[in-house]
Image 1 (spheres, rainbow, N blue to C red):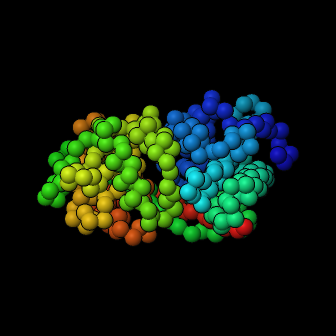
Image 2 (cartoon, rainbow, N blue to C red; image 1 turned 90 degrees about the vertical axis):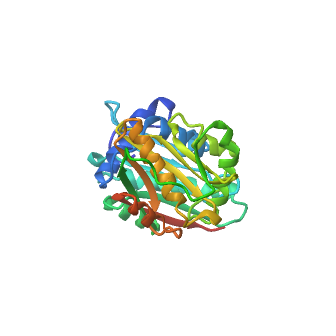
Image 3 (tube, rainbow, N blue to C red; image 1 turned 180 degrees about the vertical axis):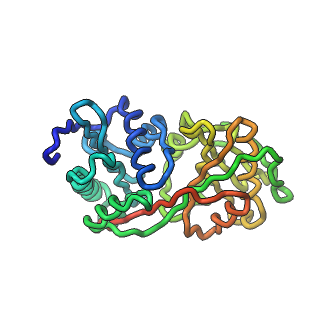
Length: 314
């Protein structure tokens, strides 16, 4: 690509640590914190990227350092959103590498759309830190437009007991026996969430409770006696932190304090496990009022993320 003597090849499992370092460097450049792990990225790639051979690009300088990467995902069977992700190391920007990466992976997205969409309109998405203006301008040159904003938030782990759940609800630690119910509840409670795509249970498991980073000891299920809500937590690359990845509350139990009880249960369990901070990622325009709930129990915004989108029409 361009005039630089870069080695180009598809992603391989052994690339995961270098990829995590690259993505974390790009995140920090844009004002974010390094939150990607090698295991987590490899899990996402193997689950979401249909073909590493055609849908991934790894670019290495002659000395072997990874300087850029790009991926195009394929939606699940019932989905209509695919993602362009990756980036260029800040020291290698301004050489046309990002332009070539976006051009190639946009073309792959169009090919995937033609092959699998069945005539439906899909959306191609790309996320980046709001402070990474270079990436935003590049995406807009290709026709992408900013469509959604997100907050990366964090709160101190708390040694004091969690807030109580509403009467009639018991909070219990997650166990494998809860998998079926939590899967169904996640699919149901996220149906109207912006950007959510339904997945079959094996695919969902790979991204959640089946991940090596999943922390059952920091995850909780609310029973009333059927599942009224859940929260799933994960290891963070920074061992002082934990990550609250997914939380759902069924409609009839919303605005009754259950979300706060679930979140403070994670904050308390994290403190007991030796962590000092819990992170989460939230839609800035969440219709459930999630941001205000998080702020009331001590979460503050650490960085801002923007989603750019491009429509892929039949």
